[in-house]
Length: 217
Image 1 (cartoon, rainbow, N blue to C red):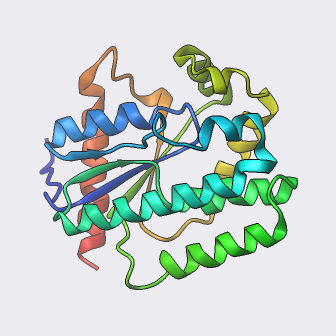
Image 2 (cartoon, rainbow, N blue to C red; image 1 turned 180 degrees about the horizontal axis):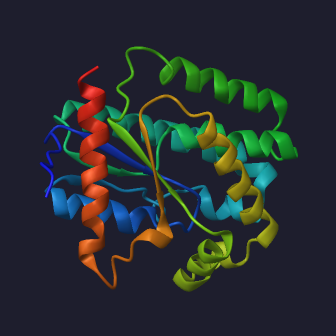
Image 3 (cartoon, rainbow, N blue to C red; image 1 turned 90 degrees about the vertical axis):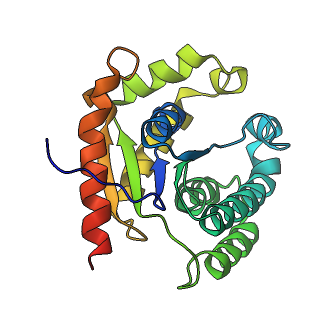
């Protein structure tokens, strides 16, 4: 076996569209590495359910809420000395969700400009701590939709399929131009944590390689 070493102060972020398995992989990686988890708090979000019923009314509020919460969490992870696996990145909010609603008219141009200006001032600076690696989960659309249906969240089940298709396409476009930190693309069809926990090991090796090669620069 190759020498595998992931620094204990590393920050690993897991990104990808809804239903792709970010939380499951986040927890499995953290357990395997002895890291802490940084999980997206869906149940405590005061805007999420309202948003799914009225995109235009609540899209700006939701994005501002996410930006504030993710910024605080990112700051906390680094101030704590690292050793975290994070479920969803701060970059997806502006690159995927806010842009999608601005393009579709469910967020006003004024609100979008306000949001992106705030995001750039907070995040896109040399002072903001970026992750050591962003793991981008990708897979076949039908597999992802099947996962959404299987977990059975009512607000997601009531969402039109076209929304998930749109998001899927935007994620693929977004990751192709992402360069805020190193990216490791992983297909969800290449591992099955429920059937075989050892299927995580090849991914651990790849993460180790990406982080250590980047830290040499």
